[in-house]
Amino acid sequence: MPELPEVETIVRSLRPYLVGQKIKFVRLIHRPLLRNSQPSELRKFRGGRVWCLRRRGKMILLDIEKGLSLLFHLKMTGCLLMSSQKSVPYKHTRLMISFEDGKELRFVDPRKFGFVRSLKTEGEEDVAELRKLGPEPLNLEFETFARMIRQRRGRLKSLLVNQSFLAGIGNIYADEICFEAKLHPTLDVSQLRPGQVRRLWEAIRFILKRAIVARGTSLRNYRDGVGQAGGFQHFLRVYGREGEACFRCRAKIVRLRLAGRSTHFCPRCQRQTA
DNA sequence: GTCGATGTTATCAA
DNA sequence: TTTGATAACATCGA
Image (cartoon, rainbow, N blue to C red):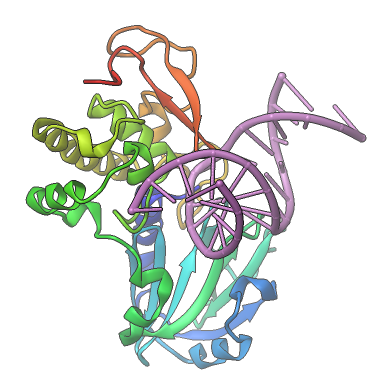
């Protein structure tokens, strides 16, 4: 579910509620959520004051003043929701963090793919999930991007969703970025001309920024930190539009399966050999 | 009831 | 290095 724009929206919507709040306790409801880390780690967060909430790729970091952090990955269906301690938790609630003001942050994840782990704030580089992430696509100079892509080969879309290349792009936005750049998703990136690399870099920024402004894409489960749906589903130009007319040229949008993922593109605007 | 699909990604084999 | 298949799991819609 949540890619960079959704995770960014979640973080922004939660920040006003969380920063400065003091944690009363952390309740783990679904042990496997922690994967290999120990439930006892969570006790250290008791009494901690939230210093900062931030995003890295599709992950969320909650730092407390003691120098500890919680790392959340929402995977397909995870949600982080601000609630009242008095409200009845949703069915698939896996973890709850209660605060002194009576509020509670709840991790809800029907499919159980998501995870939470604790770490030392300064030890981010020791955490494999964070260490292997590529740069943030919105903080990336064109020259750096061009250099990175020159060292790669393989299909354009596969590279876009590769988190060690760029952090945060997933299936929906990869399709939208390829359409915006007028590039076929299966193009070999080593064959891209300089002008195409430029267009790609611009499309990445354009799509991600617009999606953040629209507060993410809500197709099914996705909600921000206060339960509000996003609006970018109204701006999707290829994703989920198989058989419908391309907004640019009226050709029918095609769907194919790339590495197990649905991939949508316009066969006329996005030529194999641009 | 069954089947196939879903926004993620680790892992394995080729 | 890259790719495709598979698995983790629950839900929804045809």
